[in-house]
Amino acid sequence: MAWNLRGSVRGSVLLLLLCIVLSGCGICAVAQDVPPYTEDCRSGTYPPAGPTFKGNVPWYTVNLDQPPNERWHQLISHKKTQLTNLIQAIKDLAKSLFASGKIIELVDTKLPLLIGSLPFPFGEEIKGIADASGLPLGEVMLFNIFYEVFTVCTSVVAEDKTGKLYHARNLDFGLFLGWDVKNSSWMITELLRPLVVNVKFQRNNKTVFQSTSFAGYVGMLTGMKPGVLTLTMNERYSLDGGYIGILEWILGRRDGTWMSFLTRNVLENATSYEEAKSLLSKTKMLAPAYYILGGNKSGEACVITRSRESCLDIWELDIQQGRWYVLETNYDHWKEPLFVDNRRVPAMKCMNRTTQQSISFATIYDVLSTKPVLNKLTTYTTLMTVSDGNLEAYLRDCPDPCMPW
Ligand SMILES: *[C@@H]1O[C@H](CO)[C@@H](O)[C@H](O)[C@H]1NC(C)=O
Ligand SMILES: *[C@@H]1O[C@H](CO)[C@@H](O)[C@H](O)[C@H]1NC(C)=O
Ligand SMILES: *[C@@H]1O[C@H](CO)[C@@H](O)[C@H](O)[C@H]1NC(C)=O
Ligand SMILES: *[C@@H]1O[C@H](CO)[C@@H](O)[C@H](O)[C@H]1NC(C)=O
Image (cartoon, rainbow, N blue to C red):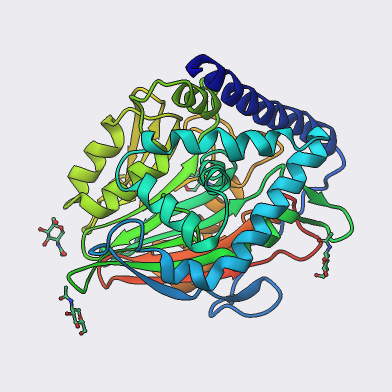
């Protein structure tokens, strides 16, 4: 029985992997037809307006004093329809890829058996979200796993002349997930936008940390602990990548941590930059990742490049040496980015042109609004300053002509 169960779950995950690999090949073929939709560094884009701005991100409060299976109820009751739409689209996509409902059946029947293997409070929270939305538990679990695999982004932490730290990111999500030819957009990215929320996590009526997140998702990709730290996570692709780790987790090897659960644990529990840095560089994980971490005083910011087992590199601010910002996309900073996906050089070019004297929310928003740093996958832009606990997030769009990623 146990073996059968594992066999089927493994089957469904292998199908998912196959889907990823096949789409990966698709993109090689497409790449040649894609002109490089780059542009000169933008200016005057802030406050956000015009066709690349799709609205403000609404705020919600999650009370950590409530039991985990109840704390998401209010948010999910507001976002039920949008969440159902997205999960339906993921199911349709899976069906069209495999021409059978088999994979969804496996997700619905087999994944829920693993809910108890998720660390506290994540399993309980996911159960609560399934209850509140009326969606099958396995599909909500799948939705939570998806973010560990399909996120590409740009993150930057910069220090101004007075020592004030700015941390900002574009979150680009939905790569490979259904290119809509008629609309020239990524279907999943479009459906994801209405799920973007800002969340204040409170304990004893006091905000512990804040995050820009997706309704229904319990991990964290972007967050701030006011007065203490800011943190974003970017995907890191590697041969010993997430798929293997996730597969091993499903097969019963549970000694690694989900990457976005670690991000949330750090936001919730770390009390200093140094402690966060240590947790993010030492915890064993299911997949490689980049953690972009900012502290609360001059010089405190770094990009942590992680393999599953260890920390490969910590790249820090060095004001003396003129390194007043660190910027990460989805490639190791000491290597060249993939030639079809070079968001790093345009972003750095614009940061350099901005100069340390002029860094602000407005100028960073300009950098993150410049194609291809802004592209068709860009779902939101978040701007954070730890010193005054300010977090602003904006929904984004990139009308044609624009890079698909
Ligand atoms: C394309 O966009 C239009 C308008 O935004 C929308 O009504 C339509 O459903 C979209 N088509 C698909 C296939 O998503
Ligand atoms: C939080 O604030 C509300 C309203 O101000 C109050 O009723 C409640 O008792 C407070 N809860 C805690 C845990 O302090
Ligand atoms: C920075 O964080 C440390 C550790 O939490 C704290 O002791 C210190 O007061 C903070 N500094 C500022 C300026 O907020
Ligand atoms: C930006 O400036 C840094 C520091 O001077 C330099 O190392 C880097 O090559 C520059 N990058 C671009 C794209 O201009």
